[in-house]
Image (cartoon, rainbow over the protein chains, first blue to last red):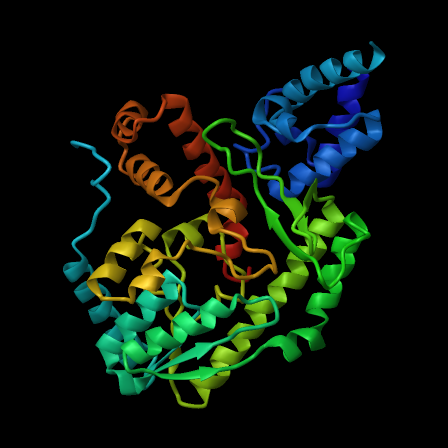
Length: 84
Length: 318
């Protein structure tokens, strides 16, 4: 869970201005209005730079990026793929 | 409710009467102004608003202002002229290029484009777009930058944050400087500025705050784009305008409103939205449009996301 801790910290710092209480593992960023379209770009840049991965346009879907839980699954997939 | 793809249709004569009565009251009694100024682009929305104003106040109390700039399509000026002549309305052409160059609009925008595509220069055209295949995949709204070389070849890249923000901020000088010019013409005649945004633009945030969103009255923000087309036909807006594909006319490369923002054709988007607002079950909407349930759900999700993420555009200063 260390990778998702870094993502969580980024979201709390950048989108919630330190208010951690609003964020659960399955909180939907889009439904809750935490991340808008500009925020998606920020989040994607953060994930690419922090985890040294490249995210394709086709991967920019809610199933991959709408919650900490989804990002965790997505990151594991990407990082495993990188190792192989 | 027996829901069909025609359920969204309005009675244009009644709708015109309703809008016109309110507009007359708002301008004369509430704002105490003597007439109307409308920015006209040759697009369907501003054409309908100009026609409504001409019929409501009389053409002698309406001024149409065309506000072309370096990147405008020349057709826009031609169509807007035709429109003003058809409704016998006085028109003024204000070329905004020098003002925009003074603001550094083009320089700041091009600097950001060059950060992404170093080869970009004045001979290229550029536009930013959203993915348009919403019916195939529910992709998130992340903008792409596309440049078109003089030989017609194109290149596209997802926009990094800094460049995205800079391109949008620089381009927004266009709508904001146009708003200033419209208010010049309105205030110098004691007229009101009449906004031209429709429901799609207003509620999904497809406008620039204090730019095209800056007006005294917004008479068609309750009408879907397809309903605006219906009203245009009733008001006898010239055919060439009614048949033209809606564009943004903001970026140098041709760009439809569908690829810039809406992601699906208006006939589908509006009907899904209308059904959703009227609590029609998703299955019924899908059946009426011959779409799948997941298509309709993706469109509703996209509408909801846009409404939610653009709330700040519609807010008064806090």
